[in-house]
Length: 302
Ligand SMILES: [Zn+2]
View 1 (spheres, rainbow, N blue to C red):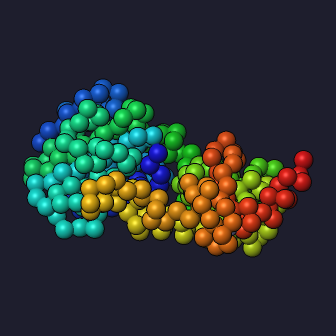
View 2: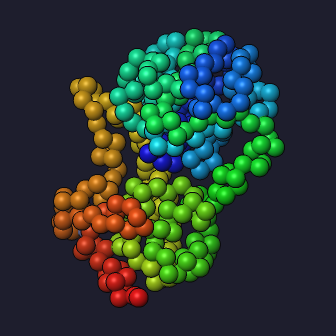
């Protein structure tokens, strides 16, 4: 599932590619993947791309916005009229979001739900294998009323350490990982980043939030920022990393994940075998040595 860093990567990548060039065609291949009248987009330009949590907000020159949710398997692929030298591009192509074979396939593919063609010859494809994602044409009032956007809490870099500590105290009987994953409390951390942040500061993800000291919550908040920044800086799951130079498919987690999906492998800090368990209903990876003290606290609490 594309997480916040991947959505930020989409935003950064598309910013240099699709803005201020007229849309000459918009094709909706699956009606549920586009809400609104796509015909109204022809003749307009995208002028700005914002992101709120995992939602993309692509602004149009008539003042309206396309709200984009990638959900489980959404991805955006841009194919330009020419090759562009960019860290995020592979020749004439930029692809980000859910990483799969579409990153390198001919477009449109059988998973393409909506696509746009621009005056300069560039084309943008919204692909979505499982069709939970969508693009929605909205005006400012629609956006102001949007329940998802309204419910979003601050992202880690916008959150004060005091506020983060308060959240942990307020949810004292909830485990740390469930708090980190609750988008209404802190926005943007998915399963990967919650595990990575807890590992970084040596906190077992199942520790009760109320058992964290102030210095632990400070360190954890900083770790949340760090792991997501590191992922954003490395380009999230873009095509450049998905397809290695030799044509084989890579795993973008290799670039930054120190604990996530490393169960059975040695901890990079102490050599103990990384374990996998379930916390907050999610597969959770941790080092029983580096993150063990908090586990004891957790199991001792009724
Ligand atoms: Zn360890």
